Length: 189
Image (cartoon, rainbow, N blue to C red; front, side, top):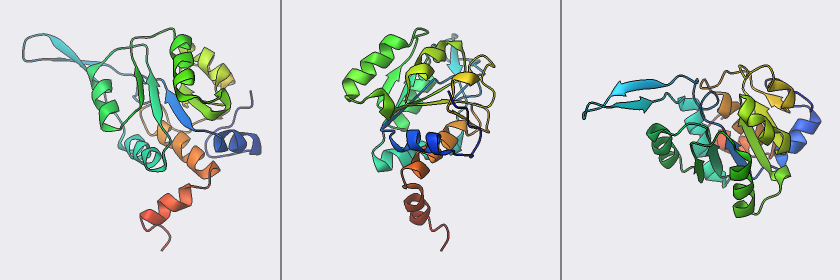
């Protein structure tokens, strides 16, 4: 694998990103900072809460606007993720799966895409099998050290702090869509 950090897009990474038609990711430690909060619910039981970064959220809106679907493959099962996924129109949501290959293959079959058209963002050991297969393998800056060598792109941000947005922008820039998004919001006028 060729590891690229931050916004330094070398040609191979740019080419890989230009082919992406689906962005998949782990949740805890990638889309969130990896912390899990157990808060009291009205009926006396605890419920799990997580924190999501607004920059990542707006990035999901950008992908939705240009027709690039997204998906979550997570080892944990949390209502907060289900709610977030519905809000961000995430197409594929699979929770409670530490073994992710079968889910990935199911998504591949359903999407009718090749692996070269899939990007995956991970941070821990359970993500390595998908990083090995994805056309664009990405990790967050604070991924486990054993995971980083499998990445084509490593974000500057830590998981939960805008790392997903970096990958989204990488894809949109490589596909010459980013300027259209900037224009939509009057950037550079």
